[in-house]
Length: 408
Image 1 (spheres, rainbow, N blue to C red):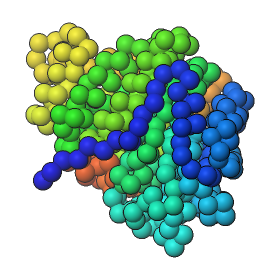
Image 2 (cartoon, rainbow, N blue to C red):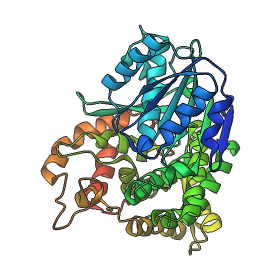
Image 3 (tube, rainbow, N blue to C red):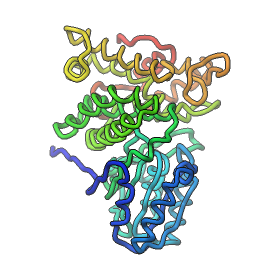
Image 4 (cartoon, one colour):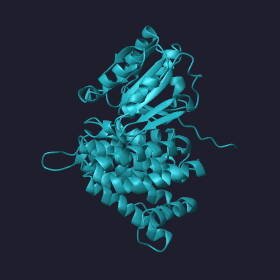
């Protein structure tokens, strides 16, 4: 079977890259953005002015929530149908960009149903009415270069990863200036999300030479620069913004695995709040490496990362995999991310006197069978290197809750 490697046609990077929007050709542009940080930073106004200078009539759709809902998507699509833009400009973190990708589908195909498009790679042919430009402000999801969008059905408490090469943006803009004001905690969570993208893409059954090149370089950059970026260093923020983007290039075509399946299905499942996506990945990644390393090819690849990319100690594959898992734990500690669901407090911080545990053991165990069944059905499960069934997910999730090693 032929492999496939799909990226945006144009990718602009470096400080000030956002001003490249003035070279877009068209007459109407809608800017989709989030909760207001892009307006406070002046970036939204910058982009609106550049577009107007280029002759566009511009409409704004602001206020996309984090973990965007189906309702927000439908509202945005309706605004687009009224305005009829020929460019959709998505600005901000993963949430507004993901939401705008889904809006695009319902703008061009009003009769399409959400239930239809949750089947991976089943989208209708886009670009009948509009092209898409994504400008990212966080260094993690890389949705500006991927074929994916994550939308939450709050009624069901499930996050759906939508997947189709049709929603890969036409233009991606990776401007580090948008990340300089990113809060440290957001920097930590999105950075660990990016590291997970690289690790999962590298061991995925869909990996190829094209995705491996990006995944391996991304791992090296992220492990080196994320702790400095967390402290607010601008050079490190620039490295991280580009590294998370190549992580996206790796996983958009190389696909992901069960760290993401579990992050998607535990994210909105508990009543006292969300398990933030990047923090979930950070907590689950080491456990999944232990689980996958029973697969000989995956073990080889993890050992290669440990020895050749990160220069960790160890002679045998087993020792190198253990060193890699420990390195991830050390990063979580440096970034103040909890190691387990049991130790997770609201907002992705560790449980302490001020921050109570978010997910009680009782609630976790009560919901475990349903979460495990949902994780088996997740779009990211089939390409995981080791086959994982609902009963396996129950055991792995228990290890993620109690912070126990996986040796089965």
